[in-house]
Image 1 (spheres, rainbow, N blue to C red):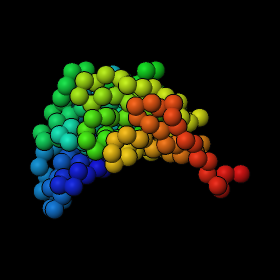
Image 2: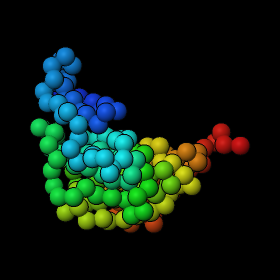
Image 3: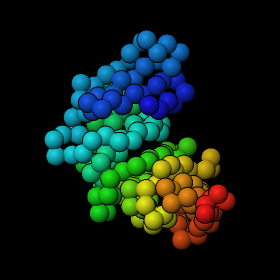
Length: 171
């Protein structure tokens, strides 16, 4: 489940999405029977986020699918895929809608230009699963939290500029 402040988007395990009014969860604004671009050859929907007029869904085969947040219809051309098809774990869109990032189960982050779909970077920040990632409010930095008890803060433009913080409770 994710919200844009006005609407709540609910992703169900049967690959359907409901868009509800934020002020009245009983009112369904749009609904998909099944996500058409998540066909039999694609993986299970794992993570969801909304940015501007787009809804992004990451799946267990490393694909990121884009939908119009208004009518939930697929938008754009082909879905985007992480380089080696590592399953998606987390996803976020920068506040300005300029970038979209996916964290995968192998510890890599893929960042795309949200307008052109051009891949900007593919960087290893963790030894395994990226549990959460989030852009800073100005969209210039990306923060990640991994299953390896590390948190990172990196530059979006130059992901090699990274600060890694180890959990103080890590033995």
